[in-house]
Amino acid sequence: MLNIAVVGLGFMGVTHLKGWRTVPGVRLHAVVDADERRLTGDLTSVGGNFANTGEKFDFSDVRGYRTLAEALADPAIEAVDICLPTDQHVPATTAALRAGKHVLTEKPISLDAASAEGLIREAEQNNRILMAAHVLRFFPSYMKLAESLGSAGTVRSALFRRRCAAPTWNPWLTDPKRSGGGIMDLLIHDADFCISLWGLPIPPLPGVPTHNRAFSTPIKHLHIYWMIWVYAFVLLLHVAGALKHQFDGHPVLWRMVPFLRRPDAAAPTAPTRL
Image (cartoon, rainbow, N blue to C red; front, side, top):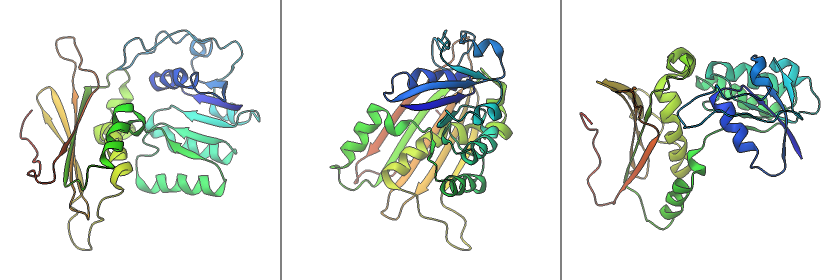
């Protein structure tokens, strides 16, 4: 039985708690949060972009810690699940790895490549497992898509589109300095899935502007995020994500629509409007 601690009892913390109770061989040993009410198991005030997010949990056999340092000093904890704001991922993950804990951390694991690579080195040096909590590659529909590509022949171009409500339930999510903005918080899901299918795109050549790019465009009630990658085997990949701001009191929730074009079809082009 693996003893785990969930760090951060906000929206993602609650989502992970619900997931852990379905995983065999895992025991919720501790939770970490600065809010005393949440440490009692009362998470009814927690909201997010899923309906009925918060609920009351039975923490009668679960240890509650107000700080990560207290939890890391608990020798019974073998792994920690970090559900903190993105700008706290690097220091929290580093401390956990150095304390000898395995780590599952919410995506992205870092806001820049250098510190992400530093976390990988920390995991290797401490002989611990470090995993980013990417989810698309584990969704049944995406798993089916990946399976079907095994017999689909060479894919020449692909377009992935996704829309969701603006993350207004917590102000740090709308601060690019803390969350990385829509590219880091939204498109990173799709980037991970595409990497799981085809690996990394062609690296930029010396002295040549990169052909792999990500950018954002505000359009009325939407904020559009684009990512375009090129692969050596003539795959042109377009990924588009949109955050729809709350409109008429009805936010648009997650909607994921993948498209794959036939090899003989024309390459997709970025639309000028939705």
